[in-house]
Image 1 (cartoon, rainbow, N blue to C red):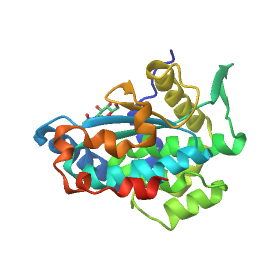
Image 2 (tube, protein in one colour; image 1 turned 90 degrees about the vertical axis):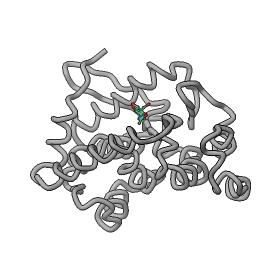
Image 3 (cartoon, rainbow, N blue to C red; image 1 turned 135 degrees about the horizontal axis):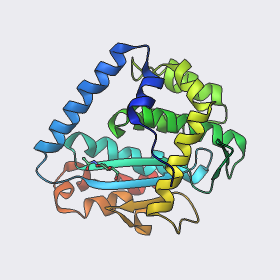
Length: 235
Ligand SMILES: *[C@@H]1O[C@H](CO)[C@@H](O)[C@H](O)[C@H]1NC(C)=O
């Protein structure tokens, strides 16, 4: 196993020279830690593996992950982690990482862009709307334009640094890290989307995430769980 890339280094690479960006992230981290500490129950951990150009992954983002996350994340009930990798392969040869992806080089480019955004912003609360926006984009340039430049979800996310990250060894290495995580906790993965709920694979969650999440006591008390919209939007 390769040593993990230093988070500090990655943050420095993608956010500098905006010192402001670094400060915002530090403030945000403190807020998140505080929120987690105050939460009565630990969040339900949803760890989600997919591919940027896989239509099933895209549908899963739009119909399952985003509605659940939008409804419940503010109350710290769910913790969604996304890994853009799936049926890809990365190899390191002579110090250079090269990846191949199920849907070809364009998918690797977009996976790497998502991996760069995830690394830069670190918290799902920050990165998920951007990664969701990028998901399924057929053009790298429109992923950058629509999801960073025009969307402008974060003042501290720099499109030039993100592009450089995605098109460099840093992007490849970041994507490879998601591959390591996948190999570690979902070694039997043979399709995507592949979902782990509290560390265990849940095939049921692939079809009805909301039902699974709402079967836990704490979320079930929320108004969101008393509506049945999932069945309307998911099929
Ligand atoms: C969220 O999930 C990630 C990945 O499983 C984990 O590293 C992190 O500690 C979790 N955060 C909380 C607040 O549970």
